[in-house]
Image (cartoon, rainbow, N blue to C red; front, top):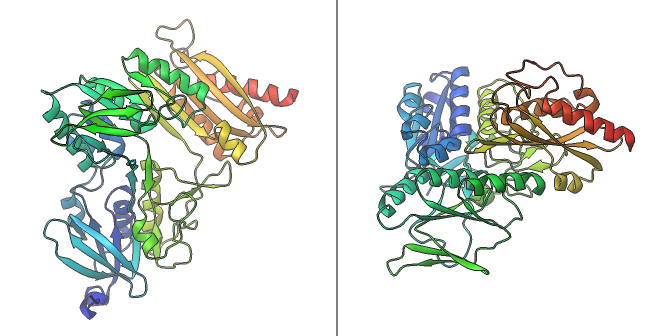
Length: 470
């Protein structure tokens, strides 16, 4: 199938920007490009295989759990709003191939099956990531869900509605951010929840000693934690519905299973087109988010790898914060402006009920992998002055480079007021500060908000002293 001459050029000779994927990165890019160039200068065509655009995937667990009552509350901008701004948005249309030589994309209407080619002058790849679905018997059974998109969330809620009368056993496979948040959501829905985790502790984004604090909190909510366990099979009823999760050490009943074992970059299209991928399977881009070696192609969001400013290595970090920033950078450049994305320090925050979990920078194993020597300290403090009502405990762990004292990473687990303190460390990491320099930061203080020495600064003092002594 060839690309027709009428499809080879935008209307009236205008440039055409084609966007694959209409969530955070893709539509941020399209919207920013439209701000810089109007419809008389630039045609923008965006393809999305799902039903929704510009939504908060991070909010899905809170919608499933009932904290957010309506699905549409997670949608920042509707398809109609995008179209009103002169963006040709094509929902339920999946791009199946990229032809670099002809500068065109092949797409298929998901519902009708009709196919077409669309040319591009500039291309944005924002295909996101897909939940890891293990290759084992029963992995595709009815009632087994990965949760990455609003469509995924709706399918899970539909399953919960159907299974309500049959049983209340839920198993979450994996205990990363998605797994932990979905376990809480299912507890809120009244399910008996078991979390089966390959690691020694939940939250592998933390060091195990900090993950242990999360483990205790989850068990305190009534969640059954099964660590150091590998799922080998999902058992089904005769009608194909899932009924149990099997590990070498036991079998756990399940009316619904949620896969929370992480995601992989959705880069099948890019790989087939011969675009460069990194060690983690994500697209490789330059500072302008342009795909390396391709002047007119950009990529952003969960399908790319990014530079870790602390380790100097490429990493895959699927977060909405990064995706929206990537989109702004891409849209500026595709629209004729100039912007760059220097990299990240790996900041993330989550919660299990009222337990707040945060990290930024490197874990111990990250630092070792990067060839760094380091010292660690762990301190206990409180969210407010100890005498002020409502003060709650907080644990802060800090890594600092041996000899130089350069801050390498911070992890925080605590109650109200703990999580967002990680932003102090994120700024310090981005600035390349040492633990010693952090001790002089002029942070806000009043008894309702902090002890006179903020917990992060207490950790910095101990880390600086440890570096000096070694």
